[in-house]
Each structure stands twice: as structure tokens, then as C-alpha cells.
Image (cartoon, rainbow, N blue to C red; front, side, top):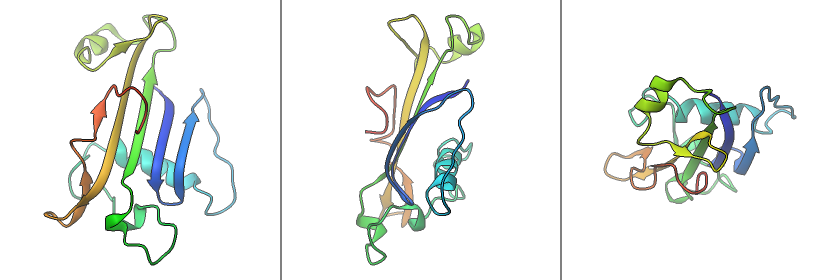
Length: 144
């Protein structure tokens, strides 16, 4: 299963990013332009420990226009993914069956999974946590 599309909002140096990923995608840019931020956003969002302490997500990961901004009141971090079959029947039948409740079928007949994760400040836990109300599978569009 490959990521076909990635959407990131308000993460580190990235205010908003929406990219299609190909078989091979190369990230090229100057130092501090966001290449590592893209990879780190993917790592955090797809971590097996998602939503638990130790994922590495901190106030330093929140995009801020200036250093004086309080990350706890800044817009939430959103990370969205789109996975889609390369061709009809490309995904293993047992995987499709196991994920049937979250999978959609495109007009072309391809299986597709879309999900987004929103991280916000939780004043009770005093930590950045996934916002369970805003995190969803198969949203109509990524990350929003």
C-alpha cells in the first residue's frame, strides 16, 4: 500500500502543503525548507504509537508565523493521507476484506482509503494530542 496523496497543515515550517506522490518522489530544497518536516509528519501520523505519549509531537512542531506565538492557541496541525490501488484487484483480498468498513470504491472501481489526523492542545493532559472529533477516515477531502 502506497501513499498517493499527502496533505499537511500548520506543521513546523509548513503552513499548507498538498502533494501527489508518485512511484518515486524526491524532495529537493534548501536547508530548512521543509523536506525533513514532511518525513517527520508522516512518521508521527503513521506511528504505531499514534495518540500515545512518546510519538515525538511537541509544541515545536506547530507552525508559527513568529517566535512569540503561543503554539497552544495556534491553528491545529492536520495531516492527511490518501491510499489508492494502482489497478483493480491490486490489493490483497484479505486486506480489502479486513479494511472494508473504512474503504471506498472510486468511480473507476479502485479501492481507496483516505484519513486525516488533527493534533490540538489538550489543556487537561497539558499535551498535544490527536483530536478524536476531527480525526476521520474517508473524509471527502484530505486534512480539512
